[in-house]
Length: 461
Ligand SMILES: Cc1cc2nc3c(=O)[nH]c(=O)nc-3n(C[C@H](O)[C@H](O)[C@H](O)COP(=O)(O)OP(=O)(O)OC[C@H]3O[C@@H](n4cnc5c(N)ncnc54)[C@H](O)[C@@H]3O)c2cc1C
Image (cartoon, rainbow, N blue to C red):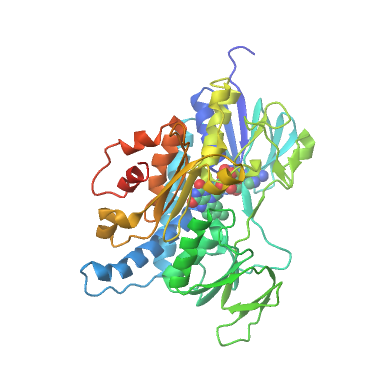
């Protein structure tokens, strides 16, 4: 009806859902957001933010230990798990209040309950006291996220056998931690617990940590792990976990691998990926197509059913908070008929991502290995941080900047950064790629001196 507001119903209040809610409300829609647990989603409360808060504490510890070479006489630090738990809670509370305040300021109607599609235009919400409510919608967004994958041979108990969600922080600091899985999450937890003083073994299913990443990048991390005493169990797949409560030598947990090796420790952490939260979401009721539980979407995040979108981890695209937030905003624009031209689609190939290890790892755009695999001509320049005055001042010269560009035009196509503040520095390359800048643009930019960003300029010459 002309003049009537478009009704959005959003299921799931993580970065995708809250971003869509605030943008759609700002564009004039009537928005209802259904969240079964806590606003901010797994990103703020269970995954991204708590893990980064712990990593920041571990990183502060590592830097303080390293600071003995910076003119200090005695540096002695240890972690206080209770204080760390409180710190994480404070950060989460502040983020939750900030998101809730933003939603309230945009008049988003927040319903605490579990949402389910009951038809192409209807969502049924069940609240914790068992009451149900039916909501009619012109636009529906499914943004229920994902959860850690648990293989059928493992039974996490939150004490000895942990998923990442038991580890913020765990009830006790693991003396000898076995981490299964060497993807982004696995290596971040290896790094974090090593910094806290745990002895860590990492089970790596292939011959390289971070499978799929640039081998030069992975090699720096592997060497850093070895230097810190991490035991790398390469080329092995875990296939069972045995917990023996009677053991007294700190080997309460044994992980058996497919090649016969057994890795023992006091605790085990599963970091072998995630699965989408699509069970019980009513996809069939609305006729929505999915694959392995991920909702199938097009370049506008639209499902096969008009008016129903999916975003965030549920959409099976890049599982990043930043991507989920951008998808939420784009969906609000598209559903409200704003900026729907092809140039406004998300280009997932241009998303920057980071791994918060020590050293940090970040990359964006075209990877050198992928360019070779495609037979594409590229120019690659690589400069180590050790050339930079700032890295000497920081007492941390590990790592490098690598820039991939088009040899004919100089346009920046991709880049990898390993080293301190890589997650911040990669933004320069992300912007260069989005804006179509050339290496000459970067080389002629007047960066601060002394600053690590100067290495970006040098790698652009
Ligand atoms: C350990 C770890 C670290 C990470 N670190 C980073 C990082 O550093 N940077 C980064 O960009 N990404 C990171 N990620 C990824 C990031 O957390 C996810 O990509 C992001 O949470 C996806 O957002 P989302 O909106 O899809 O879902 P979520 O954040 O998972 O939110 C989904 C919400 O939906 C709710 N929900 C589910 N089902 C229903 C239902 N039926 N009804 C109502 N509500 C429902 C849930 O309670 C939840 O609040 C990390 C992930 C992990 C596991």
